[in-house]
Length: 372
Image 1: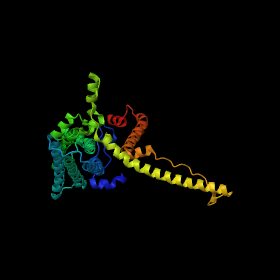
Image 2: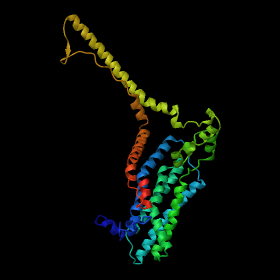
Image 3: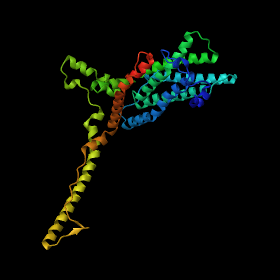
Image 4: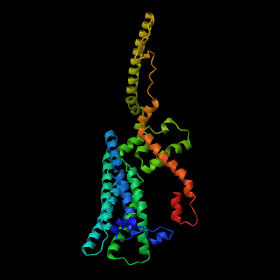
């Protein structure tokens, strides 16, 4: 296709013309060009677009100084080592392409680009893991979702290599190296997506304090745990056995306590009330002056006007809005929840239209895509 000429020149092949996909196989097969461009660039771009948000989260934790750094637990070490292995595999694929080029073999330009991007991304993820360890961040939704996107986008290439291996198709030396590297790469990505479902443990003394004072485990739980509210399970379990008492409940997180919220509220409310009182006092003084001048004019039998308008008492000053101050206080939480609710409503609204296209004549992956 003419619109893909630039990409096809990089790949030295077709971008969107795989016959097995067009003819409708049970599982879609994408072209090698599509696998090494879109299916590589999407997860990498996803990570780098959210990287500034990750740094902002770290900055917020550093300012609050709530937690000390994490220790090198077995889980944290495995996460870091596996990410480094993925970076090494990316360098291996890049090195193999350079070696093939030196042997005067034809190597598509994309074979130098996509492993380089993968290597830089793995370096970035490794840096994020170390930074999270230093600042005491036990979990990161950005890193977890990044591995999920890698898992989804990497499945077509993994399936394509399995197809070629299962049919005993002969592979050239370069393709064989890439095949072996990817058959190692993708299972590691699957393992990483699973490992990031768990939070990195804090130091033992912090864990002991949490248990001793019955602190809420929410902030020590993983991203997936918080999404599913799995950390809250002990409360209903205890409630099913006996009536809940105050001692059975978790302590409030610091961000939900009055000691934290009252200063934030006063920082917004007190200046607004001060401005309101100043305006009100100014209005009272002006009304007093106007009333005095009216009384004087009546006693003299005169009608006094100011700028051509009869002197009248001004309307009262409106008090500051409580709702607006509450919005300013929780603006990030409200905006985030509103955006999520909006996306949910749009998906619910579009669901009947998408399900209308679900047909028995469609293949499994097409129906699954429409349902999801």
